Image (cartoon, rainbow, N blue to C red; front, side):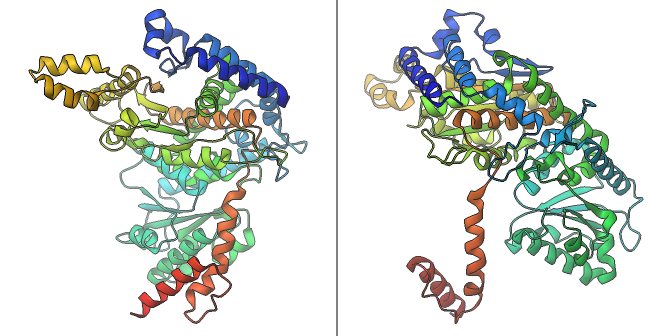
Amino acid sequence: MDRNAVAAHFAALEAHRVEIASHRTIDFFADDPSRFETFSAKLDDLVYDYSKNRLTRATLHHLFDLARAANLEVRRDALFSGEKANSTEGRPALHMALRNFSGHPILVHGQDVMPEVIAGREKVATFASAVRDGRIRGARGDTFTDIVNIGIGGSDLGPAMATRALSPYGRPNLKAHFVSNVDGADIGDTLAGLDPSRTLIIVSSKTFTTQETMTNAASARAWIAGALGEAAVGDHFAAVSTKLDKVAAFGIKDERVFGFWDWVGGRYSLWSAIGLSLCIAIGPENFEEFLRGGYEVDEHFRNAPLAHNIPVLMGLIGVWHRNVWGFATQAVIPYDQRLARFPAYLQQLEMESNGKHVTRDGAPSPRATCPIVFGEPGTNGQHAFFQLLHQGTEIVPIDFLVASQPTDADAAHHNLLFANCLAQSEAFLRGRSEKEVREILSAQGLSHEEIDRLARHKVFEGDRPSSTFLYKSLTPRALGRLVALYEHKVFVQSVIWDINPFDQWGVELGKELCNRLVPLVSDAAADLSKLDGSTAGLISARNALLGA
């Protein structure tokens, strides 16, 4: 990366922003009747419309120049070639291999990993099919009606999000549940009402030492053993892990252990055996369709020109908003109730990947990095935080996601849902001027005094940026595409910001301190003198409450 060139291109973008700041995006549509066609991109039946963002052809040229100065295309090719993209941990980031259907090898340290990947994929599919058709049963010979996935972070957010999103592809007699929080209410509420003899529990932990996961796994094990006996544990558990000795000590059979590789990061692991619960829920054929959707985006990202490359456009527009306009947040609003967990999934994907304050060489970042990501399904968000999005002092770029037709839902409902999505994006674009407000209030017969009192409260500034993803329906393939698009968007932005998106050191300190505090919290007589005043005070206050 030529940092001087990158800085120069950012300076050019700043100057360009000043040039267009007085122009409203809605006026760009008036000036260019083909703006939608110019500022949208397609991948099969998926349309990415970014025409409602305040940008022009010149903006895109500046952004593409910035991308080239940052060596985006070179870094992209290096990522796919198996170079050590995760520089702090010295390993590749090749989750794309998990969804590779090209027939071509993918090399890690000079070795083709595809034979192992395909074998692992087939093992997951075989086990999932056997659970679904009843060939694998519980200790008493009962078929499984409930699958409980125990994990945290990527081992939970990915499969939980995707299983909910693709619920129409599941079976009514086989339900998936997800436990992640170390709060005992999570595992307790999940297991309550389930039949142990018909429940399969999947423990997802690469090291089989993750504190939250193993605490919950121990509780689930006690639940099974208490109801069915110790000998039943092996028939009611499976594990996604690489630590065979720890799994064996837990009581899980070797043939029910599914591994993955250190070049697969947790938040990118849904494509691996971490997706076992999803594969059981929707079936191996649909799971493969999910993988193929991701593979199609990989091919698109590798081969499409920058001007038509959807992840590149997503990433660069995000940089335009974050660094040039100074927008510190990003909302993701799926107009699909089954995508309720998608914003939470993206929170980890984006904020754990790019929430970094130093560049790849350890120097302080010269500019802001990842925005705060949040969201809720439409239309719920409209009646919650959209007030701030429309009239608040902060401008929040928005990604809308919507299908052209529903999956296993009422068509009339979907027409209303779709209309709401378009109405909101139009409202953010157009706004409503004080002149328009006064005309409306006057037509309603209000007095001049009432109009003067109310007018400013009803003004919408508009020109609040949004992009829309439109796809035919939320199929496994469509979901795979959406996930992979955002993955590669994250990579694009990491290149521009010159940071490593594949490590997550920020989660480690809290873990270390928790391990130190557990014995102090558990012992009312523990010496708290070495703690800070607040932490010691809170522990003491809790001890007092427990003793009250």
